[in-house]
Length: 111
Image (cartoon, rainbow, N blue to C red):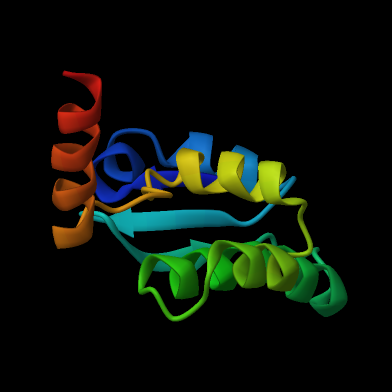
């Protein structure tokens, strides 16, 4: 799935339309999915299959689903799904309070 932001869409709408002939185009506003562009010649069954990765990515980003569950819903392998998340600029790992504690422990072990 091709992703672009509103600024790039305004600059070059033809590029998004060219991509939409092959696959859905996800329009990002900031770092959030905002809209999708589909080619009118695409069948509803194809659209349904193409939407699964977008839905799974959104649910993963909101921490509703784990990486494995989101990958399964998307229909992609875990490595393909990670690549998909990377294209959408969605972090696979998000640092939290536990991460800083683990880094402190690691620093202690290494010193």
